[in-house]
Image 1 (spheres, rainbow, N blue to C red):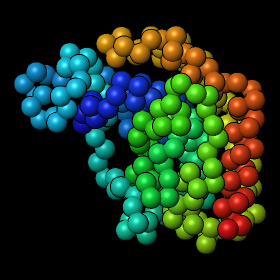
Image 2 (image 1 turned 120 degrees about the vertical axis):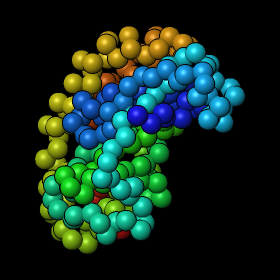
Image 3 (image 1 turned 90 degrees about the horizontal axis):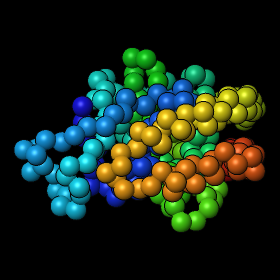
Image 4 (image 1 turned 30 degrees about the vertical axis):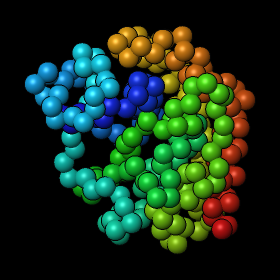
Length: 233
């Protein structure tokens, strides 16, 4: 198990925790996450001096046979409808949870060649880059993986009608995934370590914005609009 950046702020840790829990409910592949305690003897391996060393950190299970998606590894990806649908699901998740950290120059994706699967990672940038003091705002056309080179590869292979058809078919999946996340909130709040000192009422107030009917509808409309804008660019 690899230790995940414990020197992030506690708010970012909460965001990472929430993102990992929710993306699992969406059925999108992501490394298994768990809370870990770093032994005192191992702290010398970390650069941070500002963390609470007795608090749980986040750990992700190491995956074998995966490649980091970068400008030099796009050609290893199978440009299939299956992978295109996976990419659109990840993009839609990002729109819903306001993830600003998966963009044209930072895919935050791995690719499993054997299973032909995209693997989502890194959720510290959800809620508009861990912004808890203001309401969430919609992503723009360029703030999304749909603006990245990986999506352009699919644009070159599939017609606009094919891509938009797959996107529109995700509406029921979108609604059902949000319901699964909503049902998981009580248990998730109980699992956030109290040592992180981010009160459950603060987290609940932020998370509740995701389930506002207006937000849900606006996200879907923005997703389709940004998709169309990027297809027509």
